[in-house]
Amino acid sequence: MSIGWLLEPYVVDSVTLARHVDPAVLASRLGAGPRPDVSCGSAHEAADLLADPAVLAVARVGRLGDWSFAVEYGDAAGFTEPGLRAASSDGAEAVNFLLTPWHPPSMFAYYSDGVHVCSFGIGEEGRRWGTAPDLLVPYLEAVGLLPEGPQLNPRSERLSMSVIAEHFGLRLSRHAIVDGRLPLYVRSRSR
Image 1 (tube, rainbow, N blue to C red):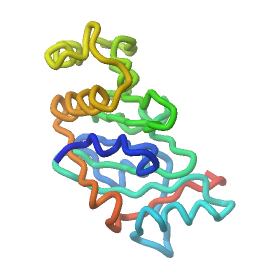
Image 2 (image 1 turned 90 degrees about the horizontal axis):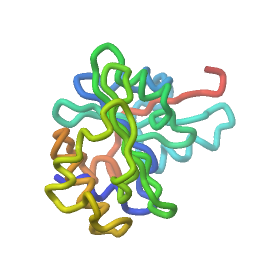
Image 3 (image 1 turned 90 degrees about the vertical axis):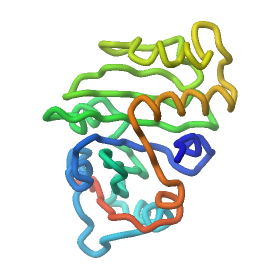
């Protein structure tokens, strides 16, 4: 199960994954609480909740293997430094994809125990930052993306996503996220 489908335009904007963290705990770490009147919903229903002026963001959560995930709509906290520090707190690991295929590059970030370890633009792997920016360099070199590999084209972006997925053991079901009903959590403006 590939995660390259995340790069499809307008499917998902932000996905945060956390290893060995319960989905409800991940939502809470991102500042969202359960929606009392709606327990599960589709991507369309999550987006519709943003019409409520009191709702700042909506997260749909689930788990695949060791990783919980939060797909965020609206003002997502998962791609912010405070959000990723919280998601990876207490010894957890967190990966975030901020997906902007209409305005490349999409971004990858990896945090461990509240520390920013590695980030780069997908398709711009030559520019990296974090406490261990070269964490994935051997794997990126092995598939030809570094040092001077192809930049910002669909093939290289999907290859980069494959390297990330393989290194961290990430899997995401397109069907579950796009078509499925997942538990809903809401971050309100009053929080």
